[in-house]
Length: 303
Image 1 (cartoon, one colour):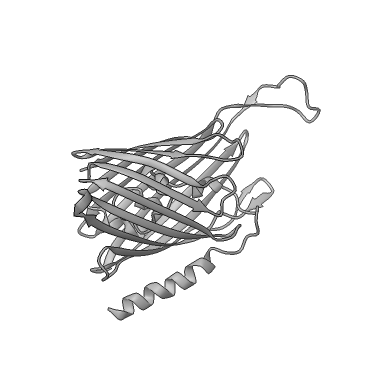
Image 2: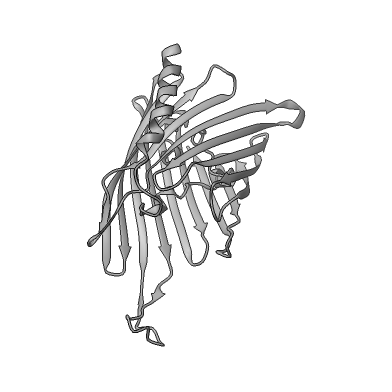
């Protein structure tokens, strides 16, 4: 229907402005922007319009209704330096809609503690970690248009200091009448500022517009998926994400992507294998500026 397309276009215009406000460097809890899943990471984080696995809880709760049955994703990320990123997400389809849950945690090795006098030897160690969870719900409001929302408690710990807050995500997912085309729009991390004692900072809000095109290609016995996302963060300029995937008989997939607008990120690569109801994904994320490369692994289960 025409009104569905008009509503989608209107939200695509309005959502980027909903994520704006903070100046560069003012947003905190940036781990909330780290993508979920190795498949999406290998495809340059261009994933808002892909509703095929449990990671849609993060990328677009509006895409969850397109995920069939029950799906579980477990992710381990060896990030640069001593950072580790652990994630889990699950979606469950019911007659009332699709429910989802996500956990994400960023951890690092203990760091040496020094006093203000810059002692030559450390005075012990201290730790830091960030965690967040999300409870999400999505459903089709008409056969080709779905919406979804999620609520996320957020907690950060730095030595003896801590900060907590509550964030909200929302998204829409549209299956176009053009064969193979899907469109999406999301806004993420809406909420009040967080505070470490007297230091207050905004949540890392952003809006994302996405599109995907999928086509079976008989001559190569597989499927080709092309994706694009435009991201509008509240503390920086527009960032573009491009992704591509070739899947051979839905058993083996080769992936690549590219991110535009990042200082230390660019090309991404990866692959995936599927055996019955179990899938394994891997993503290699080169990181510039001598920070060290990142490797991401994910196990996917279908029930």
